[in-house]
Image (cartoon, rainbow, N blue to C red; front, top):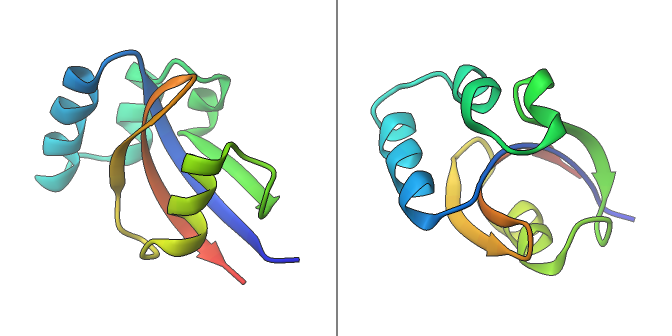
Length: 92
């Protein structure tokens, strides 16, 4: 089964996500922004979700992690939880 490691920042609105994405694109520290702005409990780990299997996350999130580029921030990605900025650290 394919596995991956990713981190994310979860916010309530697309506007918040767009602002954070701009900051990340301009060199802001992902972990620091996650700790400050993310609505997910993973924020205490800089947004890290650790390693997980394909299918463990909701489909829209899973698709980005398992099909998108590695080490490039993707998003905003909308799920029932809000808007995510996602960085896949590695996958196999």
